[in-house]
Image 1 (cartoon, one colour):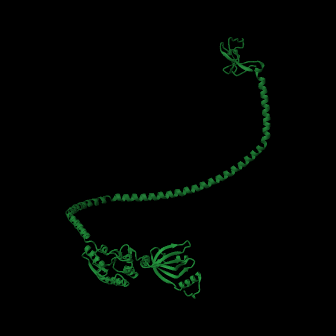
Image 2 (cartoon, one colour; image 1 turned 90 degrees about the vertical axis):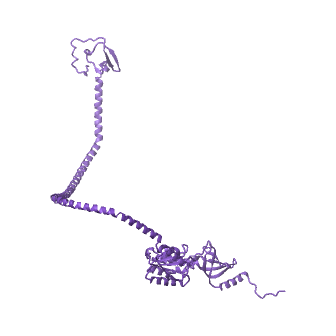
Image 3 (tube, rainbow, N blue to C red; image 1 turned 60 degrees about the vertical axis):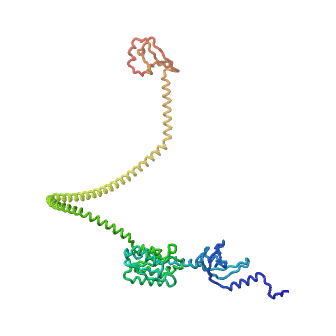
Length: 480
């Protein structure tokens, strides 16, 4: 039978608390590893896993510390994390590492430092192309700094010989990798500057990783290149791995391309010489033609001398004319000045008249306005009086006019002969006052009290003694 254990039985919570105390005893640590599955929770907490290829540990960063991280981890980043403590979440039985800081490790860290240095040097103006030493067209000697027996050194020498064999090449081997490389490169650059014939320096190295080229990211070397009395060409690395020195010096990016910046191409110089020789031969062929033109110009000059004598005589004879022209010019200037003076005087007088007339007009307008207001007040008062007396006068006038109209109507009615049986005879609206005006056979109009009629004259009887009596009356007279 198994023996009974003397160990006290613990609850799960009690044992979890013991594990938690044991984990906290592990303490803080700095871990390097690769980031996997980074994510953010809705509360702002950062989660990710850290692995070295064998073990995997979950990590978390509290929301209050996320903003202070030097680098926010991304999938696949190689980082160094500062672990405050391991933590056991007993409710879920889950272990997490509490992380307070994350920074890049390996090449990521080197690249970060490179970018910071480039930004600082650019702010100081060390990356400005205008401040670099000018490259010579035909250097007497080219200094080359590279690894002893390296392919980069061979590539630079071959490229220089191919382009310009006349240039001397002085090599200065140096370390190009490792912690001692920056000072070795600075020493080689100083030694080449002391050589009296070196006009330009090439620093060359082939490609490599960020760590391999770390010496060319050294701030001391970058500042030494900028302070160099000779122009420096950096043929280090490739375009995808561009160290700090390539930003401070003339950059060739690869060793073989450095010769293109430092020395001219022999073929180009030969073509230039051939072109200049052709130009000289062409100029020599034009010499006889130019000599003939010079002789022609000489004859023209001789003829011009005779012409100049005649011109001198003409100038002497034209002296009175010049005097008259000068006198006319003076008169013109005097006239212009006098005209300007008169114009100014007229403008002043016109301004005075305008001011006086304006004042007089304003005064007349004020007086006319006062008189008009006075007349308007008098007319208004008179109109008011007429308005008060108008009803009485109107009634009186209407009564008087009505009486006169009634009397006239009565008089007209009394004079109307048609009411007493008389007939009005007329022709073409003209009254007939005498039988002498009638002719046999003509038609006349008759107007009665209640109508009219037309009649034809068959017989005309005129009393003796009445003939000619009516002929003297006016056509419009009536006999009653």
